[in-house]
Image (cartoon, rainbow, N blue to C red; front, side, top):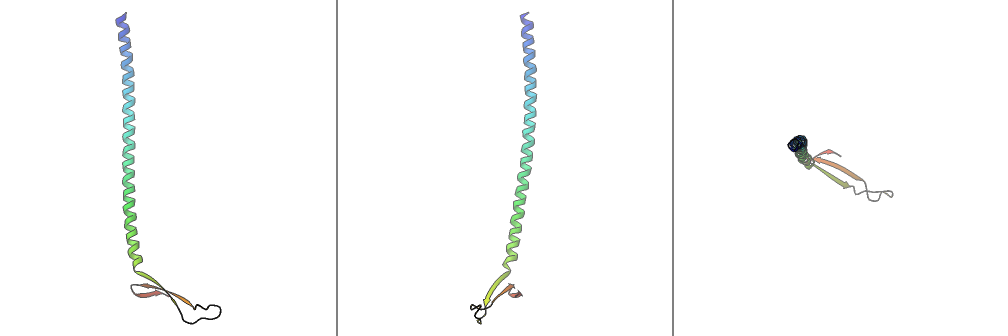
Length: 98
């Protein structure tokens, strides 16, 4: 009878161990999937940062071609004693808007 009891206990413990091992395997698969998704997200963020850096450089290059000049005329009146202000935008040395 003792042998049967021990064999039953071993069989029961073996089933529990098998179920636990299966659960651990499923958890490892889930962790692996989350890690892969995280790596893909990190790659997307890195690409977006590179794209933003490139766009920033392009915008700086475009902006560097323009200069804004404000000039004041020497005449004025009682309402505007400081004179009239004008604004000119230059692109590569040429006035493009005044």
